[in-house]
Amino acid sequence: MTDGAHVVRLGEAAIVQNEALGAYAIWRFCIGFQERDGQAVTLPLTFLLLPLVFHAPTLTTVLGTQKASGLHLFAGKLGEHREDLLAVHGRALGLRQLTLSSLMLAEQSQLIRIEPSAATVRAFSSHHQLQAPTLPERIRRIAPACEKIGYWFAGLSDQQVAHTLKIGF
Image (cartoon, rainbow, N blue to C red):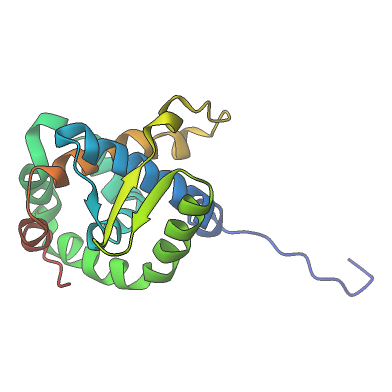
């Protein structure tokens, strides 16, 4: 451009790793969690979602693991390359602000309700029938992965999830 204006090109990470997609992912995660026993998700667990689904190789591993197999088998697959499992913690730290912004947007959009006194998050199920716009395949794959992870997490305590994923809260 000759007028001195800068052209900003968004990289793949900026396109995929944004608070709107994060809000959608957290909502679908909460739906999957609640599917198991109807309980709300504890707030700390929501901070583990985006590092799992916004990392393409990890997302592929989630999608390649059967829902019935559970978190332990998923972590076992991820742990075949130990550095991949250990990297989840670093990504969780790096994505804290995005997760927080995504949580706030999801609540403002009435997809979820955050209960501060209990430190829990619950999806509003009436939105489950929400008609999402047609999304690119790389983004469409996130929704079923989020629900699967939520389902896996619901079967374990927060401490078991943290131990399995080698995460420190």
